[in-house]
Image 1 (cartoon, rainbow, N blue to C red):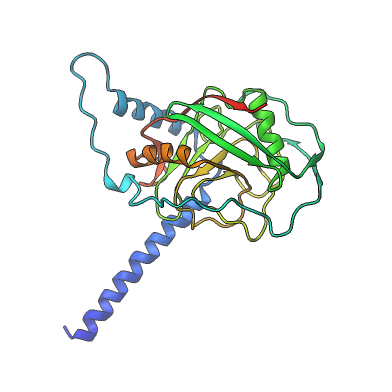
Image 2: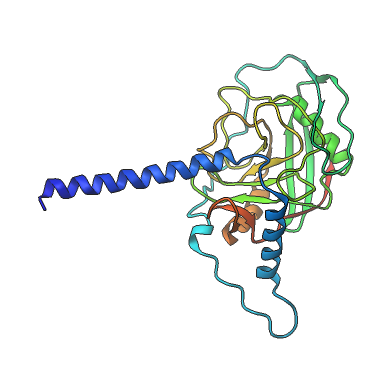
Length: 281
């Protein structure tokens, strides 16, 4: 085999590997929404409980080692700058919350339609099984989204729910929560429009809404704990999470996932249960 032929073969193999990685990243981005079936989620949760807690008694089986492919290869440590619109919104915007055809995962009333201030921040604390997660919601970014989130917090919609999805792959490292059914397909029974803009970027510490397409926001949200370079600006960013809270999520990511939508996308092996959500007075 000539040296030139050998180099051509190496280049072809490298291109093939790169193409396969890009296909996997695109598939994960498409799945950043409301797509997981209830049956699959129940199976995964049961498997996760068995791995972490065993079956009781004195003869508990040792937990199987988590394969490296089900864990992040690395997690960026630098926090992303807080998102900011290049062109500020008007002082007030009109918000509309439309009833969905799908029933609510948990009974809740939508916020009232009408004008909402597009300024100011609000603090929310999520008391979870891994510790308290401290959120700052920014109405200058997404006033209708912030209004909705605070409404759900006030109605205890997020209380006693679990974060059902974790992704650990290159380009998409997020923890997804906000579905009381725990299936990945549940919502509040209504939807509202996106509040995105072309220069929106995601990174470590950013809080954003999950969706199943344009203008389908409801209750599911995700926290970016690491790399989000694979995301395009189609998910409404509405605030941030502080660094100590992100470090708690790092530990969850490092424990890995029970695969569901590929080896780097599934249920967190370390459960993240939201016991209560509280807005600062």
